[in-house]
Image (tube, rainbow, N blue to C red):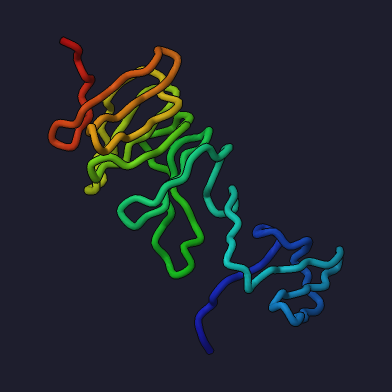
Length: 171
């Protein structure tokens, strides 16, 4: 018969699983009549909606595409989009179950600012803790090869050695 492309149900946002009729309007939207109301699916839209039904938990603070994958920093940790046909689902990076406040890319490394410290994720997927200082905002200054980390302990400037940020010392 064919492969299932996508399933729309109460879990993914329609008002009820008991769909009694479906209609497509001139804009490509699908209108579903159900036992408990009407749902509209903007199927032709280039936008997607992600939440806990797709494996994404917590308040979202930062998103970034790194190494052809979408990463999302939330109040519950760091999540990565799973590679499937529809890019629909996320999984949590197990090592980071803390509030992720900011994400940036520096020297082919994903830099992760959290309330419990600063981390780097290599292109190979290795997670390294850089600092245990709160890091609410991270900024990469390419021209100087500086990584700035701002948090409750002030501003820390790092420079890169072998794709790992090291605290910059002053002379």
